[in-house]
Image 1 (cartoon, rainbow, N blue to C red):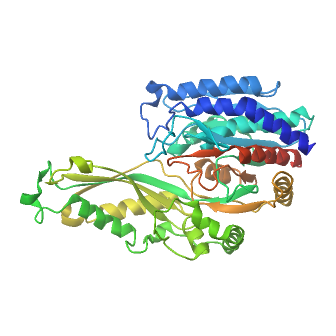
Image 2: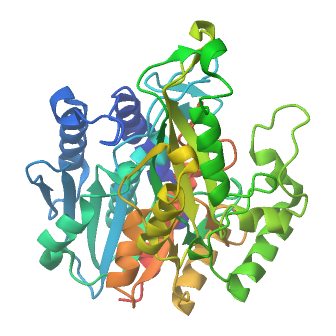
Image 3: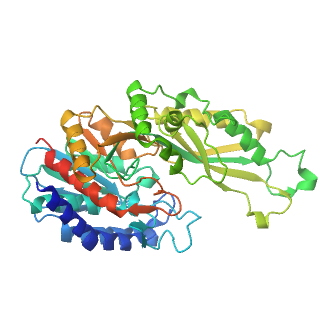
Length: 467
């Protein structure tokens, strides 16, 4: 493999074929089913499916086979089967559904308005992780142009990852024979500690999402008449949340949501912090004067990767401030996002949350809890010597820096499914979501120069697979 030729080929392909496709993709508001229940009727997912398959049919290898699985009532699945000419079975993964718009985009930017600025492509879903399909085929194509012998590769692209991948277990069973037993899984849906080297993710937190609703009245009442006697639904909700979380520290109080952090992951975090240091503090857009929950950077990283944490991400029953009269509202509904550590049983954790919130409610208020599909976390198996060497070699060739690993606080449900089903598989969980890229938030961007080098690294790892 000629590495210089490989990078040149990949750069050209990105400029000529991937970026135009991503610009078209960003324009389509293909929100995940959790955020667009009428996704089928609205047609955005169908548009993305058509765009992606038409693009893939043009650019996939001549001997590859593309198929679309779409069971009634479920989101679709794209499978591109690329036969190999040496032993081995590699699965490459990505998704094409998106998070919702989110407020706070800078002037001139927007979720569905792609903008290229300073080598970054802004817009929802380009980095998380609409590029995955295109980059996967680019890596394979660049190797085949050099006549590199490859194992069998299956590219799998889903459309409900941002909803917790509820349709994937069905398709895993439906396509079991086609998927086979992967020797290596490459996922392009994760993050990077910086834009200077190749990063691989070694653990992911799970996710329990749902709504907490507290009803105290059947209709709103003048606060001058009712407040003090009728308990505020918001105060009751606060009391219930304090059962889950220490309000002063943010520590989650339920033992079912905790795990012992392995020593090797703590050592890995020490190395991670020694490389990035104070840059980790600058990763977030802190408000002026705002302080983190801890000034110990190692502990801070562990808190967002290996400890449970609660976020209130939405609310109903509260009118906008400019339209809020002096009324004691009848109910408060809060949208909860509970991240759980790797190795925590997501079903037991969800049951513990439900019991804690609903048992013996204050004032006998009506408390209802509804959950979305929960997702388990994931802890990587020990990295094989060949894979560690391959990742490090790729990073040194294309970034001139050694590779590094990190734990991520996000969730990729498919990895937990694969880890449980194929315990002997090796994993390369990587991605372009580095500092400032802000997946799920405003001003999400794809760092294009980094993505080009990442694509070359993936190609290099495919080349080094010991089939």
